[in-house]
Length: 259
Ligand SMILES: [Ca+2]
Ligand SMILES: [Ca+2]
Ligand SMILES: [Ca+2]
Ligand SMILES: [Ca+2]
Figure 1: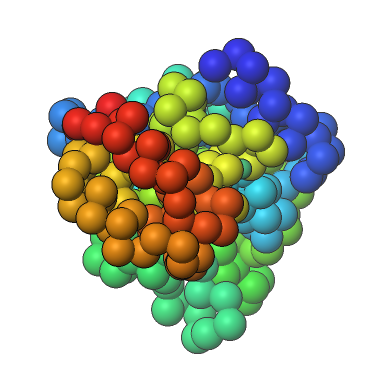
Figure 2 (figure 1 turned 180 degrees about the vertical axis):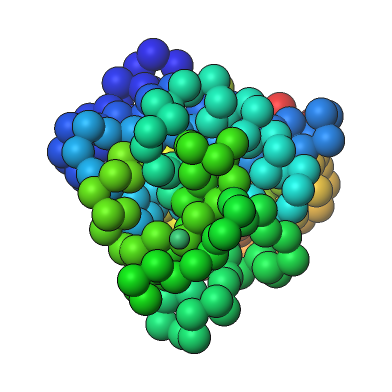
């Protein structure tokens, strides 16, 4: 964990200057009624615009948080933002909501999730000055929401980052799998190496993807013998371009349930 955070600090310094993730990311666990996503507050000493915040989030494999339901909003306020103790005189943190490029008030989440919930502060959104197309929490109003202009008016210093990517489609958010070391992330962008390389993640001998290395996978190797099939998951278990005895040995050596 410590190693990961120091790597994140480096990434953050590269992206936006004097900045760092201000806390360990926390997971809204499925067993607690959550979505399995991870969240953290990013905070810096210089003013932070919405677009710079979004770029930073993407550079570390996430996006500005989408508080798409009352339950998610409440959990993030209580478990992610409040423990940060952001000074109440500041506006922010930024959220992943905008009406950029469309009629003002046509709010949307950056993930495309349906806009069915909002928690505007009293008198907001008010499009003050006519350019308030970006959404943030308002520290001064119990973290209810405000629309603000792109540069945050020089009084916004923070953003909530959310991670939900599951590039290997195993139903587990990759961020946590990298944290535990289950998936390698050599370049520390929170995208597993296997996904960036287009190779299978984890149990690569499970060619059929049914969670077990079994006769189906053995048959796949034998039927593709000599070919060099392309694609994310295929019979070329060790990705050397040919299906041969090495792949056969990989299947036999990994026989049984995937770890
Ligand atoms: Ca969300
Ligand atoms: Ca406003
Ligand atoms: Ca995953
Ligand atoms: Ca990576």
